[in-house]
Length: 372
Image (cartoon, rainbow, N blue to C red; front, side, top):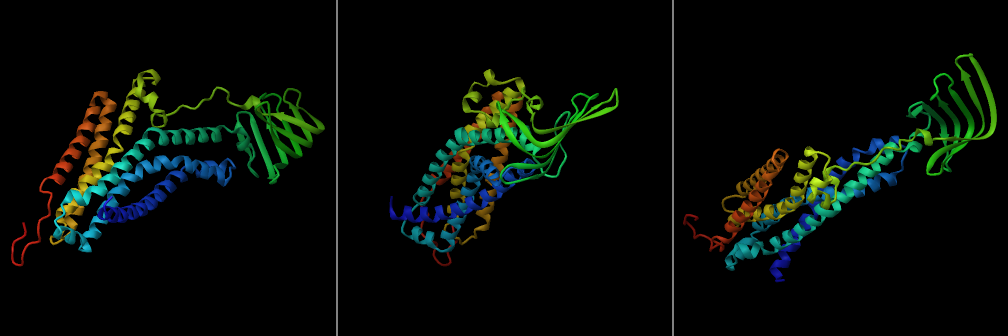
């Protein structure tokens, strides 16, 4: 790689890394906070929160990389122009494609990374997040052990725990079982433990009493015990399973959408997701070419840089909106998928043609000469 390519690439990569860190932090925080209440309410540790956030990272990167690249290209070229470095390159007879070459090569490398994220890593991370959320919501043991709160983790069951030690010991336990409305049972114990027996949670209560009330006879009977095991298995929902949305499914299930879809609506969403994964990585390359085409036309900066920056941003935003509309059209007619490819292909072709046409900057105008 030529020294000029390394110089431009070095400035670009540094700026790109800055925007990636900023945007990833913002989007990652917004996404992670959606599950913070669930994690806290289920009594989970910070490790669970960061594990879930880690699984969300590929999807976050898939979202922010095109935006970060666009911002980095605009910033990098703007600084080169403002520092008059592109004027020096212009005087040396360099043309736009030579300046844009390292930028385009970097965009191609990021496009490959985005394809890996879109096709494999992001959906796998989304599946992991959904599985964790499902387990937390259906985790009866976590729902039971909430200190100082009367919990009803299942129909007919109320549990209260006064305190929970770091060792896992439970203090001040009360369990009210009213599955049989005519004869509810209340267990009270000084201490106990939450354990798993035969793949099901259970509460071992120590030094307590069992109170059984018969509504027909209106009699209350009390029994003391040294140790009692209360099985929570009857309260588990054994018929529950995780259903993955199209964004979370493997690419194979999207390619053979008919085979894996429940109904026509689910099929159309799967087709939409398939084409989104195949086309979304191209935005980073399209945005890069658009930014280079507009910014390098004002390489000497004598007409000001506000207009090319605004034109770049407006064009990319319009392209992104057009892409969303094309994908939404697939929900009505899966055959409309060709629209997104025509849109991105046309943008790529026009940007490339604009870069190739009249490649050389040309010498700066003489004093008093009208700029071309």
